[in-house]
Image (cartoon, rainbow, N blue to C red; front, side):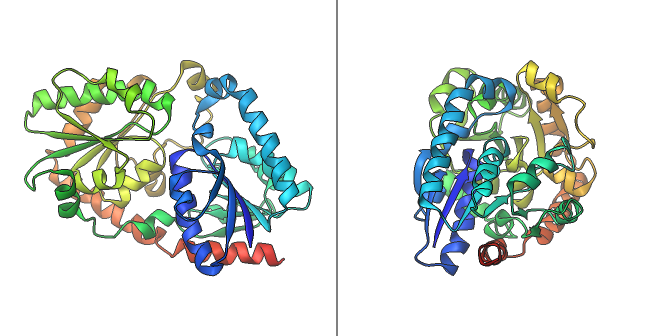
Length: 373
């Protein structure tokens, strides 16, 4: 069994690694290749280009890298058509993967897209692109298949693999011991994102907030997981005198160990919810990207925990509201409101149970059916 796969950035690599775990159980001799990262490589994946090549965000970054991205996609498509895998699985990265999937589908290769784009949140017109590109969509959230079925698109709800991978009871004590944190410490995890643009636009606000929080509560401990290759970019941004532990990866340990987190909008917000950690969601981007995206959303929530709850369970500070002062104020508020803290954790527990449904098994079943059709 041969599969082509493409995962962009760290979150896609994480999903791909978890998916490959289930696929390898079904097909022990599975061969898979394309674009991926260390989590996928650990499952025997052959990477032709590193996933960091796709770790960009927004129109400005895409335009700056468009020639390289188009060249990679063209070469990748040519190689996949030459090798003719049983199926191609595009993991998120819709702007890159849909064009590739459409080309492969037209040439008779079965195409599966893992992670339904958030057409229920913004850019609903993308449903037409999905229909042209994917034979089947694996959906992370239970309300998504019905939306796709109405458009004649094959889709299956498979739950979220992170909900299976993350224990219902977070290993707080073990994580703190591994990170050298005391049981009585009050710990704040800073997760600015894994893209270079996120470090550029979000990390300064988070680090400024950490400095303000440390001034208000001198005993706070701070940990910041850093994606591979970004430590040098982050180092000049660190405020003088701020006691912060930089971690190479280890975001799950940081979330298990912390009391609260300041987190960039994206998959990491769902990870924080699965670890039952109250959070402040932050996001900033290039002004042109913001101008293009502003007003295109169909609902008031951005963060996945809020989208799933259909309520502002946790605060969202986006663009101009993403300031050190606002982040510090909202972060400190979680530490002095125990009832609100406990209510958020209860909601996160319900979400975890809903999304926990053996995604690897469900996804591999759906992929096998697409291949056999």
